[in-house]
Length: 432
Image (cartoon, rainbow, N blue to C red):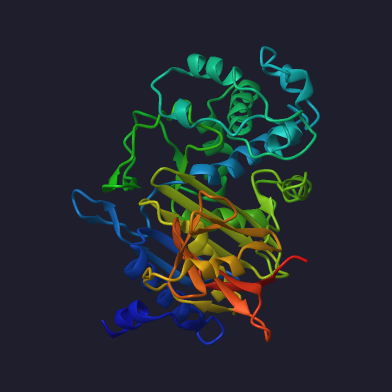
């Protein structure tokens, strides 16, 4: 109780280098107490478990707790398995990265302009798409017909743009080329080989033991996830797993038992202007000199994060079933595992301040922009309000684990800010 009270009153720091396991556990306990985290977490370093624990409930109605072997939907973490399946087919000479979409789906618009490589690397120009279709009860053919109507976001191959549709089409190509159902191909060629016995692909009929129900936030609190059509919400989503199975997958990716060194090199190479590999993002902004191969996922109550620091041999995965910000939590856990200073989550309280102060804060700082509109302060756009907790420190309305503090210089001018994400602080300067 004493720890919880301290956290509620003000933030303090923990240091990963003092005791990695204890610091990780302390951080997660704060996430539970302050942010109501529900899910499972696994952090390893050089194969040694630093933290492996389940929190919260797998079923809110029956008060059934999550356990380490609870299965969670992976959302977009699924994409790396789709990419692996395609690379396996390439290795078997059944298709090529340069093959055009028209070879497999000749009726798809602009199919002659899109290659397998573009689909894998999010450079195809295909739309993000899918939410409405995934929630529908339409069959596969009807869903495909609707997807074909979606316009391209840009000309194929000209730039990067994240696309769920691209990975949905890759799943269709896997089935067409292999002659097997997507779920069957993944089980035989990936999950079974990696020893991932608690991993599979969801459908609308099968009963999956120890699978968590998912819940998402509304104005009225947590509610059940809506119906999701797993017959068509596939390729970009659909795989379920456990943290222990994902650790087995991380281990498999260091070897060549599933993917050869050549195929892994293709998978882990960044392409385009957003550093997308195949099914992963490579060295995103948070790396601090550490090689990171990662992917996050989110769809209604499901929030997931999969992170491989390959030089440090650190693996961090967070799976949630109540829309907890797994990617933010992974950010903090990763920093602790790397021995960095991290601020524990704490309860934020809004205060009333003189909004004329905001005029000193507005402007561009490195890659972010602070705006003032109608007496309110915003982060990057007028959809992201900043709520004051002091005259100089604000928390984001959408996420209490992200704050911004304006720092005065010797002349009293605000030319730098401290951005805090998941407890990890970064100082950035005002642009000239």
